[in-house]
Structures are given as structure tokens and as C-alpha cells.
Length: 325
Image (cartoon, rainbow, N blue to C red):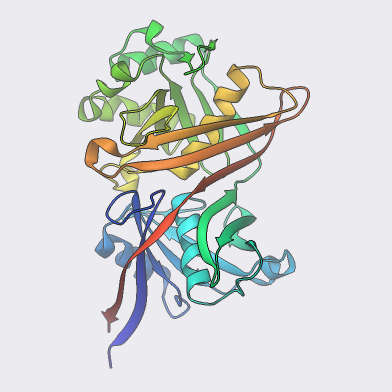
């Protein structure tokens, strides 16, 4: 007899269906093998597909409520942003947790460890308004040297003076490209102007950039520039993601795992100390999937990044069943 596996899709980092970043969630994935999970992710053909499992013994000891595995069409990821938010939202809607008071705290086990997620609630019966994940401890993997920046600019076909940061408040910063991880390493590339970032030719830069990402140990390059397109009215920055070919993602509408490192890089560049740097990021407008991500990085008094959070809204879209032999 065929197995029939329940799944749901949600759109993450948006408050309306058919925008944001779509995610497929399989709430009862225990019967699936690794190969089947990867094949299903190829079939769903979304940026990521999430598979929910019981926590491991180590995860349960660390307080995990569930374990999740995230697959792109090409590979499994140890950590991802929008699947973390979307998976917690689906499980809460399915009654896995008791919704009470004004918020719900859950803990998710991933390959990078057990991380907390907060779901804010409103009304009676309670409705989930915002989902916020705390990401892994930020790590500056590598700050690019002068020759590496020149090589990067050549791959992106931009002038060296195009890089940097000028935020909407008029604060300029000598922000330098760096590989930063809050669970997944991204090469963060700050631009002074959004128009210049938008002109980067994705296909033309793929080959050279892929080699650079491999050398730096980064899964993707996250380009960020001040301002927005209007698709997200309060956007303070815009993001474009240029991924490694191994992920088999054409264009990612929203990248929560890059939003955290972006907040770290910009907060450090602006000299934030003993405070929180917060930025509203827009992504996906060029493919008609406008996404709104809120990224925060807490800095110690000596300017070291301590805790990173990324928040957004989630809306349900599809419920279905997948038939497998």
C-alpha cells in the first residue's frame, strides 16, 4: 500500500499568501529515510522543505521540543532561517503546544544545536502574530583581505568604492565584506547604493563567485544595500542572495540565515556597543515575493556580538498529502 504523508505549506516573512518565502513542512517525517527526504525536497522544488522528527536523546536533555531537518532541492542544511520560523508556526497551529498567555517559547533541535523560538500571540482564541528565532552564537569566520576584496569586486563586476554602507539615518561606515555565521556561513557584501547592487548580473558572476565561496567556506553571498523598493514600506535595507550551485535554488525570496549575519556586520561597522542593532530587511521583490525580515544583534560593551534574532510573520497556504510506495 502507498504511504500517504501529510504536509503543509506556509509563506514566511510575509503577512499575505503568495508572497514571502514558501516552505513545505512534513510534521510526521519519522518513517522517511535520508534519501526520501532529499527526493521529496526536489519534488517540492522550494528553497527548503522541513521534516519534523522527535528530538534525539541529547536534544531532549537540552530541552528540545522537536527536531527538524531542512533540505534544499540539492542538499541538507544544518541550519536555516525561514524553515525555523515556518516549522514552529505549523506545529503550533497543529496543537503540538498549548497556546496561552501572550507568547509561547519552544526549543528546536537542529544539527547546529538546540535553539529557542518565540511565538507572539494575540486575541482569544490566540492567533500567532510574530515568530522570532534566536540564532546560533555569531562567529566571524573570515574578514576579506584587500586582494580578496579586489577578486570579489571583479567577480561581481563592481568598482571597489561601491562597497560600504550608508544607512537611512545618514550614518556612513567603512563596512568590509566578511564571512559570518550564525549557524550557516554567508559572505556578507555591503553596498553603498541599492541601484549598484541591483545591477550585479547573477548569471555572469556565478562561475567566479562560486569559486570564491568555495575557498571561503561560505554557502552563499548575501548582498545588502540601504533602502528598499517600496515593496516593504519600512525597509531599511535590501538583500540579494547569490547561492552556491550545490543548493539548486534559483532565487531565494528571503534568507533568514543571512539576515542575522547582516545585522552583525552592519552593527559592528557602525560601532554599536552595549546596545542592540536592529534593521528591517527587504528581499524577493524582483521575483514578486516581497519579504520582510527583522534582524537584531545584541552587542556587548566592548562591541562583540552576543545574541542574534530574526523575526517575521507566517501565513498558511496549502494542506495536502504526498503518496509514496
